[in-house]
Each structure stands twice: as C-alpha cells, then as structure tokens.
Image (tube, rainbow, N blue to C red; front, top):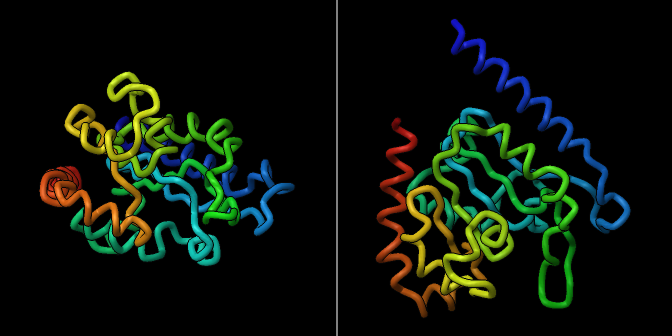
Length: 207
C-alpha cells in the first residue's frame, strides 16, 4: 500500500508541475509566434528524450516530434508512435519548451530562460529515468560531462565517444532531414550505435 501511495504522490506532483509549465509566460514578450510549451513527462518514465526546442510544425500541433525528425528518431529507437507517446514509458523534454522562432539560418536556439527556470524541478520529478537520449549540442552541453570530450567538442566528436556515457546516456545527432549529409558521411553511426540503442530501449520498456 505504501508503494502505491508514494507513486500517487509522485504522479500528483508531476501533474501539478506540468500544469505550471504549460501556464508559463516567462518568454511571452519575446516569442514572436507565441507561448506554447511542448513536452511530455511522467514520474514513471524510464527513458528521457532531451532535445533542442520545438519546430514550427510541432508548435502548431502541440505534439512533440510530430514531424520528419520524430519519424527518424522513432526508427532509430525501434518503436512506434503509440509507445513513443506513452508518457509513462517515454519522457520528452526539450531544452526550450516553446518554439523560439526563425533566424537567418533556420530556427533560433532554445530560449535560455526555460532551462534555468524549469529543467531542474522537472528532472527531479522523474526519479525513474535510466536512459537519456541527448539530442544536439545544446542538450549535450547541459546533460553530459564536458570533461569527457573536452570543452568545445563538436557533436560528431561527442557522438563518437558514446560508449563513455553509456548506458545512462546516449548522445545523438539531431534526426532532422537537414542532417542527411552528416548521416551519409558518418555511416558508422547507424551500424555501431543503433543496435545498442534499440536493445536498451526494448529492455527498459519490458522491465
């Protein structure tokens, strides 16, 4: 009974925290496209997808990774949409919860205010996380030990060192179609990393 009560309390805390995040207006004055936090959390989740920030399509739908990047990420993980959007299995927490807008060379970086205000309390509300998929440089700078690859290391160098973070975390390049050239140049990524990723995801989901 005590275990059930503790889970109930954790779930209540997480739900209340999610409501607070969804009502956040921290960046309302600077987000041209408006405030719409997009994330997926649960105190029961074992896998955390730590990304960058929602793109325009995700901003419009309100569904994380509801785009070509999501299709590729689910393929990398070896799971379908039903499992991907099961919050009790999979948490999705970008560095910036809202779409940051568009700059000269694509989407702007995640707003720094978001991680500063929300990331620590949201992570603390998910004590069962056993694997963090760390997508892109902004998330890697936050979640990974910078001394492992050295300050200033790029995404390629960090992803190549994946075994040094495994099995608690796995650095990944962004699954965006814009990275097709990178994936072709670095064919070791799919051959070396994805089998381990799929096996670990499957084990965590079944456990």
